[in-house]
Each structure stands twice: as structure tokens, then as C-alpha cells.
Length: 159
Image 1: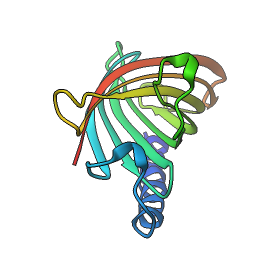
Image 2: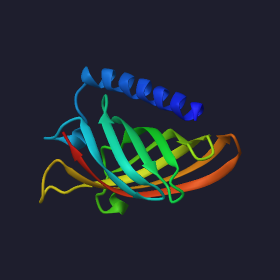
Image 3: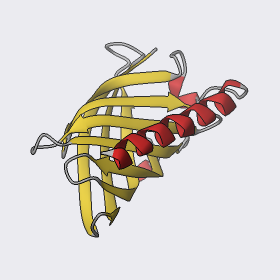
């Protein structure tokens, strides 16, 4: 559990530093008309709260505080790069990608993950509402070595 608490503190320091840089820079163009902080829910491999902090240029930090089917608490923090030009083969859906850390309280494990996702603004409902889909393959390296793939679908609101 000490590893999870230490990781959480590192994630908070990391996200704070990205936000500090982002305040001096122009907002991400994909968030036009909305705020810099997205709060939402994610369901899939784990279920819980998702936070996104838009940073400088096209960068962001994702934080997930969730639980899995075994009721283990999971913490994940990802540094994200938002692709400003959607890939045409995805019918205009913008993609984002990045690297992150994931910790699980159930076995005190810690690992790395690569995140790939797409998001879609629900402008017909509210310009601040976003639907997202993420795929995050990773590797647990502390406590044991194991590969995994996280999949999540979520809804986020920007303030």
C-alpha cells in the first residue's frame, strides 16, 4: 500500500507541473469553448473516475481512480499527446496517445502502460461533453511481471 500512496503523490506532482506549464500556453484547440479540466466516468477493464487536465499545446494528463472486478483500487496517470489533425481513416475522430503509470492496491503492483484513444465532442448536447474510448496495453514491473490490456469507454465534462 505504501507503493500506491507514493505513486499517487508522484502522479499529483507530475500533473501539477504539466498544468503549470499549460497556464502559460494557449489552450488545446480540441477544447475550443470549454475549460481545461475534464471530469467523468470510465467503465471497462476497471470502473471509476476519470480526470483530464489540458496542458500546454496539445498535451494533457489523464488520471484514473477506479476499481476492478476484484474491488482492488487502481490508480493510473498518463501523459497524453492530442493529435490535432484527425486521421481520415477514422472518419474524422481525433486520436490521442501517451505513456503512463498504473498501480493496483490489491497486490501492490506498479507498471507502465501505453495509451491510445479517441474522443468525440457531443456538441449537439453540450459543447463541453466528450465521449472517449481508450486502449492501454501495459506491463507490470514491480511486485511481479505481467502484461495486461486495459479497455475503457467513458464520458467526460469540461469545466
